[in-house]
Image (cartoon, rainbow, N blue to C red; front, side, top):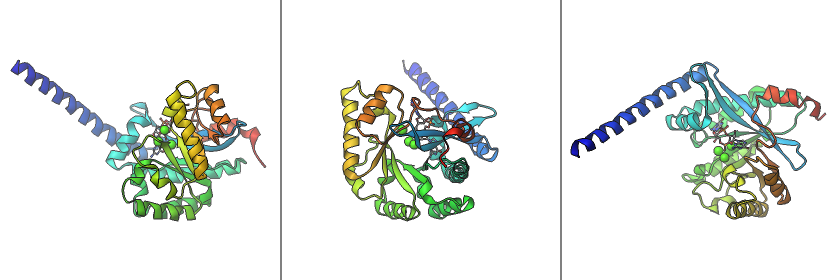
Length: 277
Ligand code: C2E
Ligand code: CA
Ligand code: CA
Ligand code: CA
């Protein structure tokens, strides 16, 4: 029994070893991916109750020459742990401004939302980098919405608020991503310069069949209204979800029901006839 136990431990350790090695090579490949232009931003529209695009989120994709498509669910957490997310996030900012420039040229007026990780946000030179990115393309901050998660409000709230206010001064708007899935209290809602709450798809998927999930979505919508915040629902896949959200005054919807995340150039080619003059 004792030796069996030892074998089990050895097996477990061997398993861990493989995992550590896999992580390290994945991390190394991801660092190269940024240099070798294997990363790409795709765009997913956010639509109003009439189905018109009123915004879009940029999402990162990694087409690895060696690995094929790697899921963001795998490489984003790795990038966050290794700190690589800072460099990647800087690149996303520049990309977002370049895509905005093309959208405007094509006559589309909506803002772009990007995901900003806490590590990136907390860099000392973050505000300067945002200003520089906006300036390289000559776009104003009012064209960008930063999606941040509740994790950003756990430590150094005062510093976070002052940095958010600086960015808000540039016109940048803030959306709380995955709202309701974090551990934070609702207390910060009234202290932060916020524009929008983004309901996570894990709640949206429960609507309208599941009573508890529907109650959560309903509460978020009515609370947002009281705080004067916009609401966007993520992961909208069915007509039933959409009609519940529209009936309950959700400002905009994002999900496979409307569109898959698409390369910006392809999206613009498909929506050329909808240009606003
Ligand atoms: P998220 O910010 O919550 O993004 C929403 C995710 O839901 C995206 O997954 C999107 O493709 C997916 N999605 C959209 N509509 C639907 C739908 O109708 N049904 C379902 N089941 N899923 C839908 P994705 O692209 O795999 O990204 C996963 C996460 O990776 C994102 O979650 C975000 O936290 C992170 N991420 C992606 N791009 C970036 C980035 O550029 N920077 C940072 N920091 N994080 C990123
Ligand atoms: Ca997001
Ligand atoms: Ca998220
Ligand atoms: Ca989410």
